[in-house]
Length: 177
Image (cartoon, rainbow, N blue to C red; front, side, top):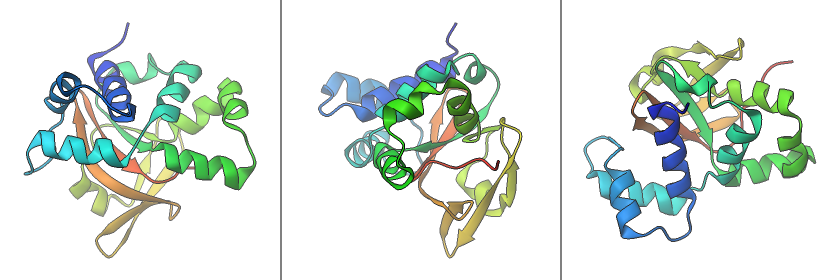
């Protein structure tokens, strides 16, 4: 059964990924986001216009990770579709091949998830975080900008869901071998 976090997370991904969601959808989803001092609807529309997450949503489903993401409090580093496209081009791996290898896919996606909530302020001083995949991911600050493992820029922080938080990153994280 889907937890409220997974349902909310996938609903946010679906709504953010839609090319032209209805105003009803925009209002409903924006109410689930608590994003700092700007009005929720304004911040949601800004994120919706900048990022899509179709590949991530497909990957979570293909890897069968809904049960893994259904309990506790989680932090997810969510790569957007442009980051995945860049990853596919750089590695020469097709989206279809990436989604087909369930074991490798689950390993990669679990490397994007940390048990517990790590907000943007905590991320700035966290150093290394242990992912649910088992390996550590490094949060590195460059001025006021955070990078994960010096490979993925954190573009938006603190997108909250019912039992977790996600940060939007510009490139998928590569787990250590």
